[in-house]
Length: 207
Image (cartoon, rainbow, N blue to C red; front, side, top):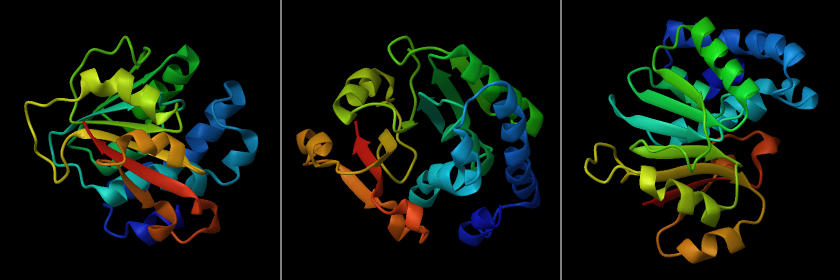
C-alpha cells in the first residue's frame, strides 16, 4: 500500500482505504478461486496494483470517460483504475466466468459503483468507449483487430485521442512494427523505479 502512496501521494482518504482493502480481498478470493498466481500475491501491490496504475500515471481520464478493460482476469488494470477515477465508467470483460465473479464481488466489497463486469469475449462486446485498456492479453495486431469497433470516434474529451492503452513486457519490436507511425511506447521503469518494471512498457495507439 505504501507503494501506491509513494507514486500517487494525492489520493483521497477513501481511495487509500479502498486500495488498502484489496490485498485482503484478493487473498480471500484466491483461496477459493485461483485468479492470481500464488507467488505474485507476495508482491501484490507492485506486480498488480502499481503495474495497473501505470495507465493512471500516463493519462488522467476526465470525468465521464468510458473505459473497456478487455481480458480483465481478476480485475486488472480495471479495478485499480476504477478506484483512481471514480467519476469514470468501467466495463470489464473476460471469457472466464469465475474471474468475472471475483471482479464483481471485489467491486461490491469496495463500494465501486462505476464498475460493470460481464463474461464476454472481445468479439462479443459491442459497446463504444473512449479507451480500451488491457494487460498482456494477446499480440497487439490481434488486439487491435478485435477492439477497433469499440473505440468511440464521435467524441474526444481526453488529452490523448481515443484508442488503446495496454501493458506489455519484453521485446515488442515485432508487435509494434505494423503501427510504427502512430504507436507510442513508454518505459514503465521511467515511471516507477522498482527493478521489476524493467522491460515493461505502456503501449498507446490512437484508433
